[in-house]
Image (cartoon, rainbow, N blue to C red):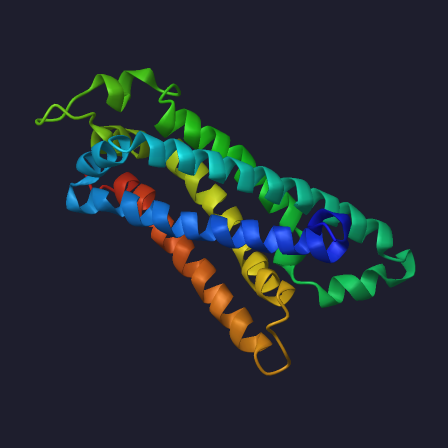
Length: 222
């Protein structure tokens, strides 16, 4: 049986792609945190010295993201169609806030991702501070300068914090749901998995927010 032909199969694809994207989220913030050690420029140069790895990774990420969005929408529509209207209130009492708004936090994340790529990958949202046209003392693109100058704008930092809150809410439900898809939960383990997933989502939110918040507050100036 092909995975996409059944509801269970589609949930498995959602779980696989979601867990893969969480691994990328961890890898991404680990690398970006090098800004606090003033090594972000060197890290960026190292990554771009591996074009096959970078572009191969981008392709895999793009496919995972598209599949995750597509089957997320499909499953959401299926769930809505399957809910009897008489039981709507009961369903809402059972569902968490993060679970009910999973599709909408996903929309916010998708929109934010486009903005993030235009800002720091394509570097076209503010050409005046683009790293590609500014070199550091070693002749490398000055990523640290671009990040600091970007987040000194309270509006830009605000966009990031709000978007990261949406990511945190998405992970609140997504982490638990992806584990349940594999059938690894029961009455004893579910509370542990839920609490662990929530703690991980909160930790990632604060970890990601550390960069824009510390810059806009003047704690880190580059």
